[in-house]
Image (cartoon, rainbow, N blue to C red; front, side, top):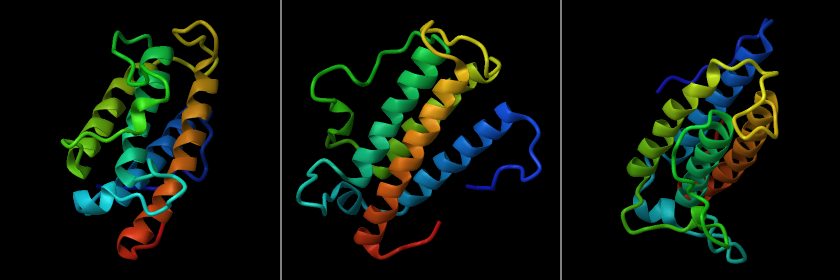
Length: 161
């Protein structure tokens, strides 16, 4: 997978926001790719038993589904957040690095429906602009990429961007 930094002389705010999100998405995938299921499902921080690399990635699938697909573009998809507490961190035995990477990439395709809307457009939920939703998803993804940095280092010692 090729990951490139966003355009350094960007003049299109919307394109730049999508480029940064794409960079963060690919970084998240890189942090999980290559881990065994056991490594990716490990919860090395005892006070956070749901904080696993697979859990973070599964949560990011739910984030993209809801914010970009449902609230943003108005796609008729089931939310992955049904329940209290938030079930998006819960792992199923079938969750593997490969399966969740595939699910995450599928949500990127769903999110393409939002790309045709300008940043000032009101999102499908009628409550926010596309700009707000995109900024929210980028900050959420960036925060969780930080978690993945630490989880990957604890899993196999790999560090880096």
